Length: 118
Length: 109
Figure 1 (cartoon, each protein chain N blue to C red):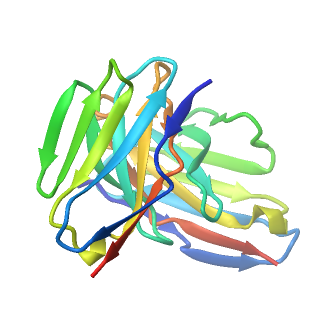
Figure 2: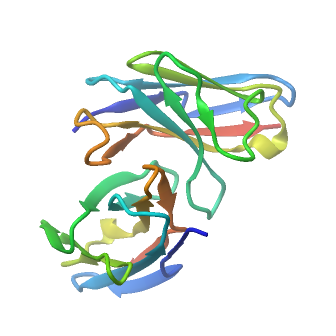
């Protein structure tokens, strides 16, 4: 199946710093990528939909100035958590629609990035 | 509002069969998905149903009844590695995925 790579897998940072997470589709072009956040023992929560070449669409309650999303190419989307605080500590996961596009709805997920803000 | 319901936790025995149910109420319907998620890892795609009936894929099968707003994931010949959370998700009329909270499946020897 299609492969999505996410980096870094784990990151620890100090409060107030910014962290960038990369999501790459390795063997297909992904016009649409999704960013999720998952707190312990909870389900995935969609943060934003990232479309190549256009501004991301954020879900209600997600601060677009705090969670900067850039989808500059068909294989790369980045999420930058700006001025991170301990409450931003979470598991962040990206996914991309598969090569067959949105018809099947099949999503391929990155490995996830565990962010710990001290 | 939109709602996906699935049991929080289930326990089954290695080698047995287990059925995880999912009921949903959404704004429109464009398919139902099942994902498997091991602790600390990202979810992996298991199945997609858009028409009524049973889809079989190896040890895993998924069933859908659109009129009842109901689906189940059936796991046969359970193995210890099947211990994971199983997430039910529905794509609504806007092609947004609505996620259930997941069912934690515990397999005992």
